[in-house]
Image: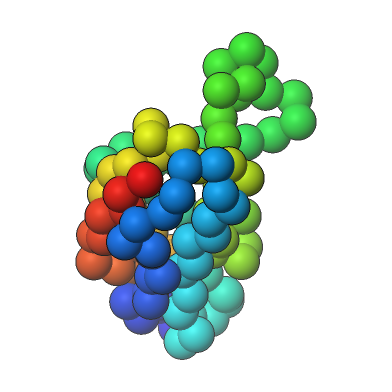
Length: 103
């Protein structure tokens, strides 16, 4: 079963230095969907423990199975337009509406 349009939870504003979690979920897809977050139209990278210097300035962790995007301490640089995409290899992937988060 292809995924349905996911429901995205993106706070419209957040205080610098706080913990912020964005979530993305859809329940129709079978097999269960994997989720990919985008910021300003660019796919966010999944941070791994083996990431090089480039991953050092990444302030978030993304879980493709649960659909969460967690910022341990948001900064002004995290302000932007976010959306997520659900895909399970069947049919077309589905995106939620873009939502802006102001830090």
